[in-house]
Image (cartoon, rainbow, N blue to C red; front, side):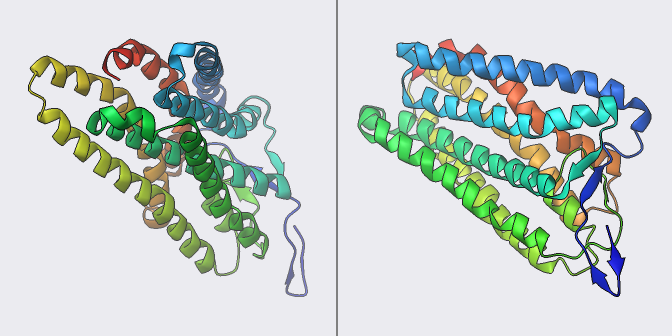
Length: 305
């Protein structure tokens, strides 16, 4: 990174510092992360394979589940191999453009994952509240269009991020206190105003995170009303039990994401950096747990849906 005559040159590379304050135990931290990554790869690939080859699973709910598995694989593969190289071999340097690419893919896939969870909530809403019209509403073309729209929304809204970062001057440290390139972690190294980046980040959070959470909340409110109105207590219990898988996926996806978002924007000086980074790396939890949670619930889904 060169600074001369009041001109600022973008750094050729950044230093990813892993988890600040816990450098001595990086190797031990890497062991559960590596294990979770392997479970994620095997579980999600197995789930996609099962859904593809098992004709009885060629239904809207399982198509959305396959989308979620693919996105989970892409999300953790974007960050985990690089993080493990930091923890195992201290390979902390990352090229400036590679950092921007990683930032784009991390946030893009996270946005798509949020959209898929919303689609799964809408799928359950239609299945519970309009069971007789379920097959005619969620046809294969509709599912494909919904998946494509969700993908495009996540990708298109993230395209400005690398360009907003690239326009910034960097005249301070090039050390990122993180295990991967996160938008706010990178822009905080700039010596210029990052107001535009912050405002756009908030706008994207509203258009994706808040919008999806509102849709999921409305869907489950309607589902709850429909389930409560069922005359049979056995049917109510069965309907409730089959919704727990999706609710679990929502919790393990959104809690770390919102914690990271609010820490960056509102709690940066009160939350220990090590805690922030550890929670941020919990994005690996959904890819690891989703195949297990949904695998256990498959038979119950078959009996209710």
